[in-house]
Figure 1 (cartoon, protein in one colour):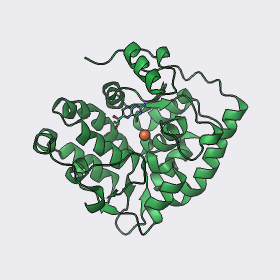
Figure 2 (cartoon, helix red, strand yellow):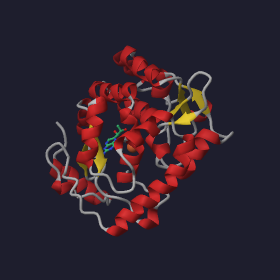
Figure 3 (cartoon, helix red, strand yellow):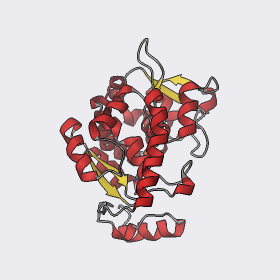
Figure 4 (cartoon, rainbow, N blue to C red):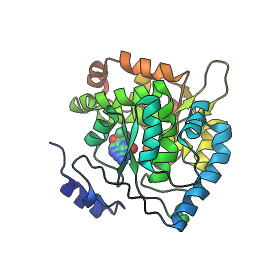
Length: 277
Ligand code: HBI
Ligand code: FE
């Protein structure tokens, strides 16, 4: 049985999470309530201007096309306006959430092509790193790439099948797949340059540079079984970045995957060390 909004809100308050979870509907969504003041608009512009300098050079073209298609970043986006443009391209839309929500409703939103975007923004003194995903990470990081058709299909399939993996005890394995693609994924098309598309990279000044340009970054050709067996840390630069040859390769690998057999085989095994995969 899924956790109730009230219980989850209490847990989040105890953990000191920032969002107003008591305002949630039963699917953990809230109104965006577009009431951001000038200071918040300035923080948004600061974050976007600085990050855009890097993404112009280091982000994959389909991410940049997405930014172009969904409208400029001068103002904090109105989620409904962006949803209209996004829906027309890949059938995705945005829903506002107060922050991290339980895995099951999160996956259910993805399965229905709804991407949850946090409705609050970090403060000016948190520009470089923030523990909880805020609107900048969720929107600037995750949304533009949802205009890329094959990645959009992968994210929907991921949401639709993640519940099965969890039911088989594969919650860590299915989370790794999201982590090493949607959060920290790289892509290098045949004969093309190395580029980034993962939201954790799109929304981090220092790690985006490191992942794409540093000789010290450990870049590994994408293999879905290896990805789902490789552990990760959340509070430092990744010790492995997996590189896709194309977005089709990701959606094809996932739809061809015998998820049940893979989870049964490896769910209790020691995770692979990302530094040595
Ligand atoms: N909730 N709002 C939000 N955003 C996320 O990215 C998110 C989440 N809840 C669960 C979750 N991610 C993780 O389980 C992912 O690894 C799937
Ligand atoms: Fe994220």
